[in-house]
Structures are given as C-alpha cells and as structure tokens.
Amino acid sequence: MTTLKITAGGYEFLAQTHPDAPQTVAAFLNLLPYTQKFIHVRWSGEGCWVPMGDYQLLLDDTPIGFENHTSHPSVGDILFYPGPYSETEIIMAYGACSFSSKLGQLAGNHFLTITHGQENLRALGVKTLWEGAQDVRFELA
Image (cartoon, rainbow, N blue to C red; front, side):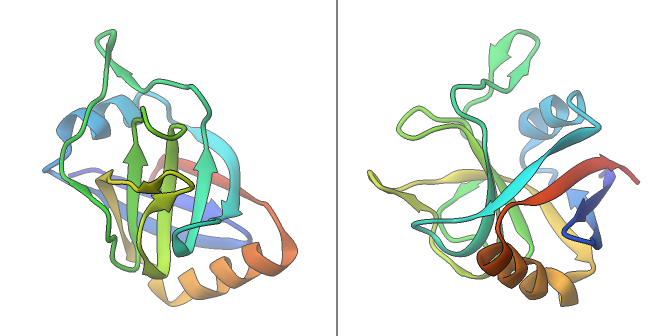
C-alpha cells in the first residue's frame, strides 16, 4: 500500500491506497501530484467531490472500469467513479453517504481510505458546504 497526503481547506490528511483497486490506484498515482477543487455533493449526502467531466482515468491506454466498487462509502473512504452514466468523479465521504447522481444510485471504486486526520473530515465537509469550493491536493506522503 502507498500513503498519500491530501491537503484540503486548510486540513491535512493521510490516506492509504486500497489493495482491492489496483488498476484505479496505479492510474491515479500516475496523476500525482493532483490539484483540483472539492465541492459539496448534491445528491449523495455528506461528501465532497471533484467533478472530472468526460476525463477518463487510463492505465496503459485502457480506461479504468469497476473494481472494489460501492455505493455506500464509510467516513474517510474515497471513491473514483469511471462513468459512463454520470460524469467521472472522485468522492470522499465525511458522514452518511449514499453515492448517487440525478440519474440515481452509482457505485465508485474505493481506492483510498483516510487513515490520519479523520477528526477533521466533518469540519472540511461543513466548510465546503457553507463556504464553497475548497482547493484539494493529492500527493505522495
């Protein structure tokens, strides 16, 4: 497993890659350092997400499909949704979360789990909800 540092909204977190999502992990590691914005989810409950539009996460020129996917991430779980029913995205649960879009329930690849800093997840989520988009950076720890 690989440890990533995630910085968002003035908070720092450490996350471990998930061994049951090896293709997603490998492809995401190729993007690092990855900087974007977290916005609050619209349909899924208590979570923050990075909308990626039509972007395809690739491993050896092959789009990533579903692996270790779930619709019900636990607090601190980070999922990658490869499409195609909704846009590609990354979602992080900070509370009760049922991964959905305007089209209905979705499932994303659970590829990262926050291991340090969980006590600040709710604060980040509430800050994102009330103050708007927050810078987020994923990098090797």
